[in-house]
Image 1 (cartoon, rainbow, N blue to C red):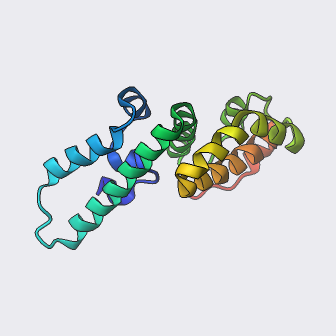
Image 2: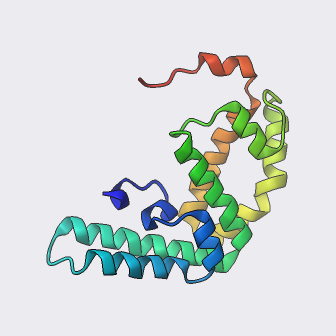
Length: 161
């Protein structure tokens, strides 16, 4: 069930960011091996086979990212986990902290901070894992929007019940 609901490769593998970085290259494959040992043979169960394929793809993605740039992988993973922790809606205060700006700093300041902090890192990761880097850019777009909004505007944001 965890694999099917995972929003990013680390979650699909059940890996924390610290575990992946500490293990380094091969962390993804180790997680895949652990998953296979825990699940066993699929025996024609389509759900298990689909989960195994997703775990294998996630393991490959994590290993590619780690081999390309461990620091970039850490930055991308932090974005993924931050969005999970915030249930997909990044608060302005946290977004501003991620960019190193003040909340309500405005679009130009937030975008400039994004370029300084993430442009080169994510461009490098895009070569290894284009889909995950693209997702990171999407998240960063939301981070910029949240950081740029005035703190009083956050109260007016609609959230589902």
